[in-house]
Image 1: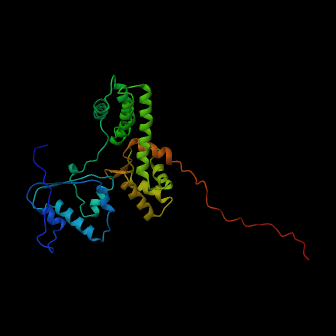
Image 2: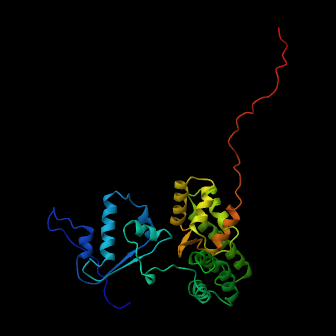
Image 3: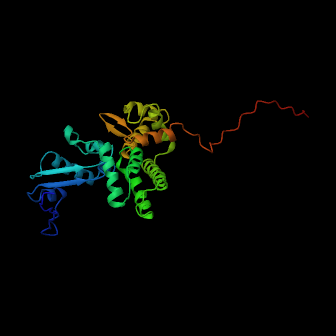
Length: 292
């Protein structure tokens, strides 16, 4: 922190007919302005391209992008794989290389430090914490959401044992953490039918986790079961949900363990339990009834 105060922009109307626009509010003042946007991929589907909200959002983003606010401004936008496309739809397609950061897993040192801090500072762990740290690190793949999936059951367990690090407690933590990881994958894929996940999983089934593939390969798999427009919608939805992430104009399942989970659960598509009834076969027999 620099010690400088953070100011909240506030502008009152001088009359009932003087309603400042969003752009007016952003231009109000001369101090440097820091704007933060989370879940930025939602800009792609938040409103119709023909709506007034779309026009306002596009106008504001262009003003920020082209330095038209007449004040220093930084916009920090965080989002999943469809974020770049969302900005492109709103008229912002050019980004300097250093302005676009693809967040990956924590390195080995960082993930150990994070888990150690939770164990000791929040959990009050007593004794040798190295076996616990090693075991949890091995299963989290350095992904922050996975680390937290193991941290919460760890804190609960340490509370029950007054900070004692027992082998039985570690087994419980690992079991609960694995369940937490699966819940995370299920949340990411919720709303996408199994047969559509199968189309994605069969593309990556023979590739090691972290391997990127071309869009044409994913689309070719989707086109085996869907027309082009539907396949494109499924592809964009997978980006929007964070199942796929763009890396240098190719696409990857960003979390290694989610790659493995998709392959294990969806690469071999299971036929429906209750297939639609087939029309009765046409009889080819002869009528042997005696003639009158």
